[in-house]
Length: 332
Ligand SMILES: C[S@@+](CC[C@H](N)C(=O)[O-])C[C@H]1O[C@@H](n2cnc3c(N)ncnc32)[C@H](O)[C@@H]1O
Image (cartoon, rainbow, N blue to C red; front, side, top):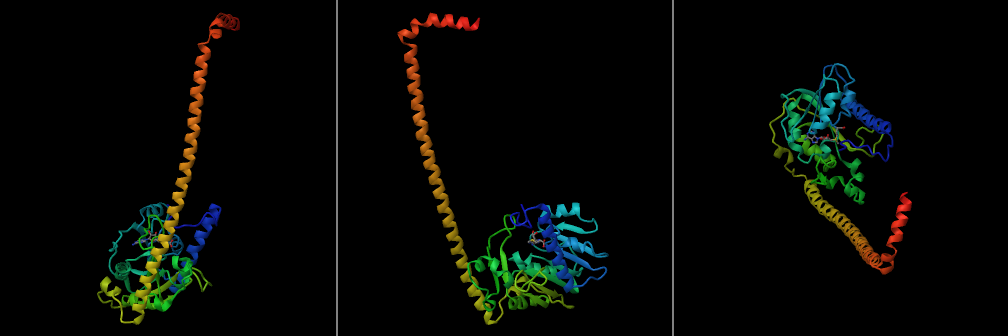
């Protein structure tokens, strides 16, 4: 299973794939470092580190206390074998908590994790718990810049900031067989809902890890844990606000979910019809083969009958002594 995909169609050699993978990690690292500059002795967590595409660049900065965790055990095992042993790495559970003390980290970053996390609120609160007061979260998520890569964008639906809250495509997909669901958010929605837990200092609707590209790429944000962080539950973060955009977003979200079901259903029906056609073709090929087999069987029966006729004929029996003489001469 490829967890972080680099298409072999576009990058035909292993070196090209590895180079592209490394470049993305390096530009994401630069993006994070531009927002939260290096400071000796920072404690940093890469939440959802995958195979360390970004963490490897932090590993080259001296004097940091680095931790990486991910759901995916095989990626973590690979990292434990290939990364410096000073980096603490572990596989975490599906749901919080993480095995970390309160107020531990100066910086937590998550690249392409919240962009697939539908149950986001428990994790946001968990990351807040383990951030130091004043500590910073840098997280990427799907937004306006990524919209055209998604299911609705591809079918021509335009991004609509005021009618979008948190919108999920491919809701039931899992991380085991695909990229998981795609979670899109608008800026006002993040400021409203994430802003209940953390101070949102910066929201960029595009360009995560793409310096100079102001139109595409994931959205990303820089959020700080307040010095005093009141106790909150996931329901507190999720509850709709009186903002009229909440209602617009809920209605549009439902409409797009129906359209997605219709769209996917149409595709599945087309696939089923294709498979049925293929089955039909195979059946008729099988029918042809069966006819051919029957014709051959009949030929075999006919030939066997003709052999028996020859073997039982008078001339065959009369010529038997001659055949025996010829056999002996051949043997001599
Ligand atoms: C698209 S990958 C990005 C990996 C890495 N951050 C990078 O940029 O290369 C998303 C990662 O998030 C991880 N993930 C998803 N949900 C998670 C969770 N609840 N806890 C930890 N990791 C999670 C997945 O296993 C996957 O490795």
